[in-house]
Image (cartoon, rainbow, N blue to C red; front, top):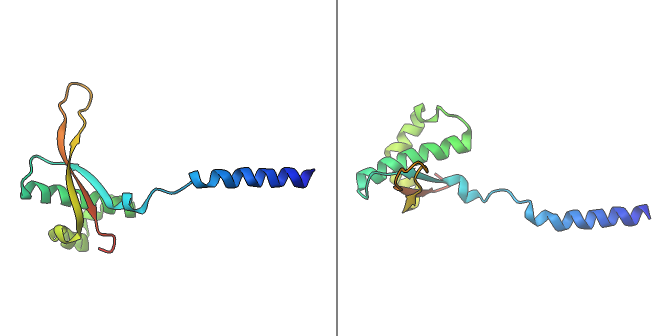
Length: 110
């Protein structure tokens, strides 16, 4: 009887396992940042901000932007981008209008 209950419990836990997944890796390399307009200058500035956010997410170091290697990466931010798209950011709920944002996915190998 005890063995049967153990097997039943094991079967139930195995059935729950597919729902217990980690976040997809791609999410760690994506950032969405507010942007003023569709210009290249605004997009690259937002991409730099997004790259810093991704690096903080990956390393946990909030001061990562001050490191020399990161400064080099920020100078060549477009070479680390896989894709970008413009998105509508929700307002803050207090009558603030929606805003424009850019969603950037960065190359994991970079």
